[in-house]
Length: 172
Image (cartoon, rainbow, N blue to C red; front, side, top):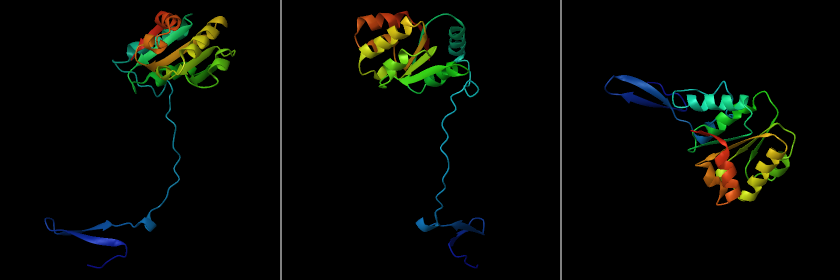
């Protein structure tokens, strides 16, 4: 059997056929600059199943109603953020993480919809209460997204806990 540089010969006794396996050294490796695609968090990419159909229906009903506040809660990696971003399609909105420095400024902006994600990681419940009150004062709409029970997001702050308890809720 002839040898090909860079290849090692592996024979299979059972089949009696010689197989070739390429052995690459570090210098032979190709470094490919492949783009890292961001996940497509769109309505088209959201897969509706029996387990989340009620959540999608509730979200779309909330979108078409006059309710100003919505809390989307559930376990980590359950699709909360993906579900919430469906509301961002086709409209003006502001999207922030709960501990973002611009939270209060954006809550007071003229955007008709504000989405706040990661609410369970809240550093200071007073900031979230201020954002809720700011959105309420300008008659905007607010969607809060987080892990666990929304009332736990209040970190013991009674005023915030009551507001969170009064919000429409989707649990995943």
